[in-house]
Image (cartoon, rainbow, N blue to C red; front, side, top):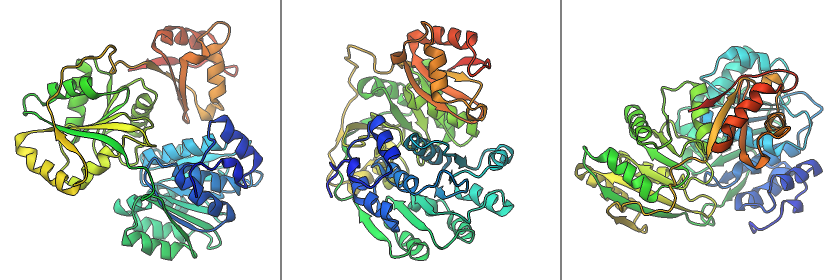
Length: 461
């Protein structure tokens, strides 16, 4: 199949097709074109595709197309290896489901208190997206029942197994009806994936689009640094090669925090993602980065698992990873969907043997050693264009993105084209506005009720 096929060629519900046009989805990606006809027909599918290939929209459309919105039972379960990926999947499915009224989608992840989740589960959601450990806990507490399940999705199934969730997965399967559609999406076809497929799927259609996908166009280089000048050289590298969204990988949580703080001291809007953050802190960090209020995200490999940020322009290795294969995963965050990207590594002399291992692993890549040029740019790419405002109400208050947009733009307020991403969570929301409009946005929100109620608003930095 060609990846230039239109969604309109599929037997999708009219409401789904209309919404796809509204959100700008016209032609399918390769993985969508190869899998959606089988997903719609009800077949089990085992698909191998890279992160960022459009697989979430593929299985999201598949499960939404067969959903009965009038039947308030949990009809689809999507299991993800990390909280961050589960949040991203939930957000994408909500976007795809906009044309279908009264669809309830609930995210169940560890690291969040059980109480609010139990309250949300008093009325069964149509779709549950979650991590295996937390979903299993709810199943055992009988706060989740899946007797009416139609579709099970294992997203990034290889990572689910790599992170040690095999036992939880087996236990969850005991609660599910055998008469269901089961979809496995994975970046690899390890033996463990084949074994899981054999246990949970019935005559699956096997799709592998990794060989046909356009190779990532990443300009890779490394620069010599010393222990003493690594921080200052990172700043120079960011100013020379960085873009509006840059990911800096560190090997430890301590370095992650230290580097982020140093960048902030150099007037670079940076945020840090690491394992010591609670869920609300992690959420805010990712929102600020994705909505372009921060231009640099420092992260450890564990914290960045499942992270998929669109239009990430550059990856910087503050230090080389201890395993060469991890380097490949790191730089693969950029140059998605046929775009070009940059990967720059800072290497001390004592680390050069690690770079030699990377060169051995990637014999066909053009990996060059270079000095860091002084920035010669007409505009500073590291100056964020947006400001994030947090609002003290969210989905639990029945707020919608349109409500917040209306409050901001009403009666001579903020121009609509100055409002960026709007992210709603259970008890709070975040909206990005152009920097110059932030004071006016705060005044609008402080003086105008939303759905008859006043909410607090503050800038997040």
